[in-house]
Image (cartoon, rainbow, N blue to C red; front, side, top):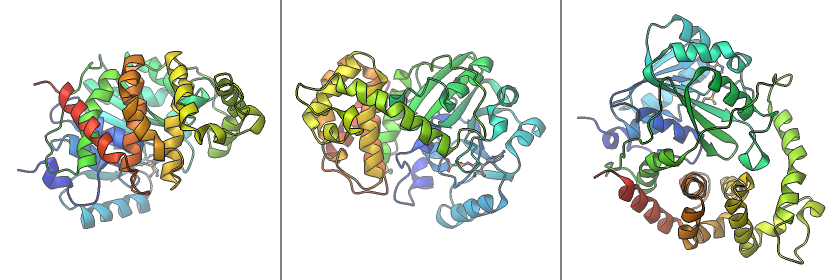
Length: 380
Ligand SMILES: C[S@@+](CC[C@H](N)C(=O)[O-])C[C@H]1O[C@@H](n2cnc3c(N)ncnc32)[C@H](O)[C@@H]1O
């Protein structure tokens, strides 16, 4: 019999600390789901899905023939045991012509750095819903602004997607991952809990840790705010629009941080940079805890920066970040359990999973914590 262990072991890792890891959840809502992945790309989401549910049947849709061919060749060569069907088609055409109903649809459609215009319409989400089973779910990857720069405040892709999805789906949740979020929405009511899948003895330790934290992260995640239906900017939410928007919002964040810094600390807003704070673990930790206690989304700033810099090979923040997480874990969980698991621990796991940089010295201890949490919260 094929299991996640036999299907996925080849290769160095399954989870890589990026948004496609979230699509693994698509396999947890029902026992042998049929999942449609709109936007195959490099197929980064396929092995995470199968790792959490080897019984999943995956249908992937990709518009670009060369991308589709390269992805299929890659899997044939390196992961011949991983089965999925791939179709060359426009996502919207597929939704309107297929007779299939899917237990989960993952929406991961990008044209370069742009959300295709068709995805930013109400009709698209109505078509997605029509192709779901009664208990089906949609998982949408929304790239845009990080939450610490008030991503829910328009203009932002997150705000627009939240509004569009809310219009068509009765229940919704959101998982954050630096500049991406995954909005999950149900055709019916979304379950409060997802099954624990910690039995993959053959998976590498960090993959096992992430697999076991996924259901816990789900059980703690919250609803996205209503969002706003502002028309997207022309030519869309491309990288230059988002860069300009981040620049515009940056001084506001620095001002919020300044207000919490110890007396005598140099003004970040005046310097136009948070570097002094990030070089001072003690001040960073205290600031973050105060933000968290106030329910301020700026608390995401330090974990997001720790992971984003780490992925670029800069260990300035990741070097101390995980050690602090472990020391203050009890306090963090008490103040905001959803944040502690879904942002604090999750970004530490992203740092560990990253194939692009060396692992920090605290990695083993964070993996112990994650594995322990996953086991402790699993139903017996
Ligand atoms: C971010 S990539 C997908 C990444 C992929 N899900 C993964 O896990 O690696 C976005 C993909 O969407 C495809 N795409 C964009 N618009 C499309 C459309 N209208 N129909 C089908 N595919 C589309 C692009 O060609 C690109 O390969």
